[in-house]
Amino acid sequence: MSLPDGPCYEDRCALRLQDGDAMVSDQANIGVLTAVSALEMHFTPTGEESDTRGPELQQLDNKLNVLIQMFAGFWRAQCALPAPVAVTVSLDGLRFDADALPEPAGPTRSVALYLNDVLPQPLVLPVEQLSPAVDGRRELRFAALSEELTEALSRHIFRRHRRALAQNRQASNLHRDGE
Image 1 (cartoon, rainbow, N blue to C red):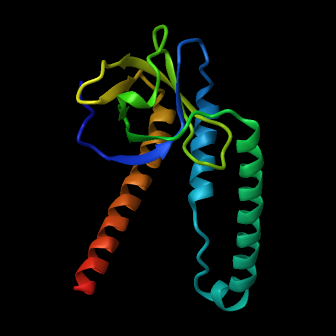
Image 2: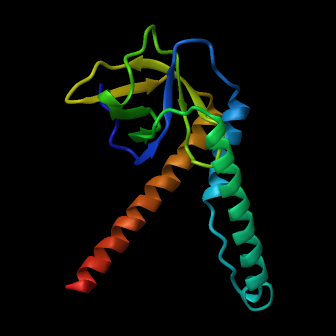
């Protein structure tokens, strides 16, 4: 089994393989993806806003970010999440280090993926297949997802993929300009 060459991204996040019926609704998963998108959005005033209300809105945005970070710290202190692991996420599944998680006791039916440090709700997706470890890596393939959830997940992956490409391009430009 091999994940496709389509858009994907790499990250470090907590994940938990689940063997029970711990599935959540598509709407709950779409809500998680929407919340992640909102948390990752950065405020940039444009046009008239930047002249008149830009500094005020930036200050409010900064204060809200402080509150979110405080909540996240409190939440992390109360929850026992697994340690973050390196994952590659695609629309079909994900890949992670085989040593990162204990071998599941029973059949894996879903994966809980904590996509953002400040968001207590995981994205919980059904698992069709969990591969045995090959070259120190394991892959799992998502079971069929609804069209609406597939679209939301696709937008999330595309945004993260695009951001990674932009960061690589920026790092390359900095390296080139530094020579």
